[in-house]
Length: 225
Image (cartoon, rainbow, N blue to C red; front, side):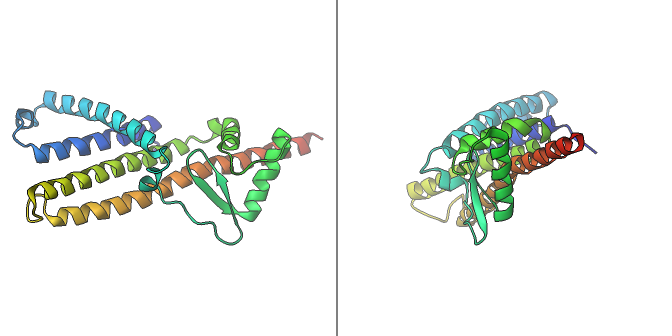
């Protein structure tokens, strides 16, 4: 069953907003709105607020990721191994085999007429502009990656909140218990690794689509000549 990609975008934005609202509810259960949470009208309002909050959180996490000294908190860059070459995408480094890298550079040169600078994100944009309408499934992976990034930012925020609460109250034997902090560390590790994988994969798709498009164009020329 094919689910419209807009659903993926909606869920990817809504989920971090729900996580934040759930955290606020756990810290302030006395707020009157939680008493009516079972009513349809209240649920609708909470969903709308969660979605708007998710949009703001997604935008904020994207802005923070672009800050050089903060980027490390979000993404774990892979090391280039033997026989591999790193290409710069918009925000990540895409690692591919030397054979595939040479094919990408050759195709790029034949299309644009000059050598590709693999360290420039501008060249990634030029590849993307050709195949942007041939990568419908990429939106799904990109939406999941953005959800991971935003939730990761929340996990860091919750950790700082926990640590500040412990420092203020001068005890680890309080709510939240130290076990919650350990759990939060585990979540940070998992979301960071997951975001890195989904983001790297989504950024590698344009290169694959570009090669497929170039091969298709080459075969068309050969069949008509």
